[in-house]
Amino acid sequence: MTSARAEPPARRRLTARGALTRERIVRAAADLMHANGVAGTTMDQVIEASGTSKSQLYHYFDDKDALVTAVIKMQTARVMERQEPHLEQLSSLQGLRRWRDAVVSFVEERHGAHGCEIGSLASELADRSEPARILINATFRSWESYLAAGLRRMQDRGELDTEADVAELATGIMAAYQGGHLLSQAGRTAQPIALALDLAIRNVEALAPQRKSASGAAS
Image 1 (spheres, rainbow, N blue to C red):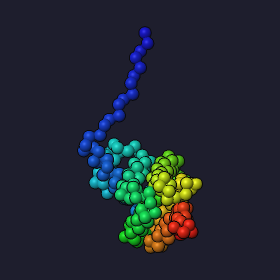
Image 2: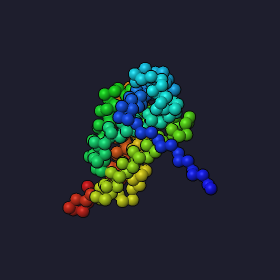
Image 3: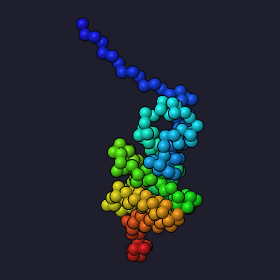
Image 4: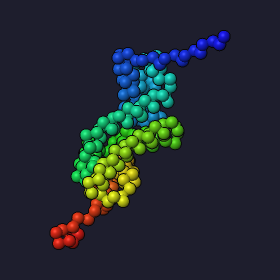
């Protein structure tokens, strides 16, 4: 008689209190890693900043790599939450400019410090941790998909050349955003990201179909 196959243990679900404790740990780690870098953040610092014990931290995270994965996911949620009010506006040139203004205003408030939460993780981890690189790259691709969707809606309304490659345009805008953040971080000024996004948006504007006046001449 064949023995019954043992079922794998079910993953224990967090209690409401446990979920809050875990979130507090990740939030503290995210803030520390954004300010000091992943390498510059120790597990002891996370314990102190989160007001938890070592046993609590290691109850939720096997090691620092597991905590870093949770931080990447939290920082992704933070960035996208900040972008969310503007995502629906990205389907017009005017909306793109409003998004640009919001980004520049945010960088100005911080005097360029710390850079993009996701970009700073990418610069530190992409060549050191393949799982982290894959997760961060997926975040960038998802972010670009929102930009591409808006540009595609512009095409559907005839406001952008139908031959324009919206995926490439979205990558260009994202590159301007991340590169601008980096230069603004180094220079402690929002000017680089303002210039970079202006150039990226002008590239989109250049692909808008020429409107013709009543006389038939291009306006």
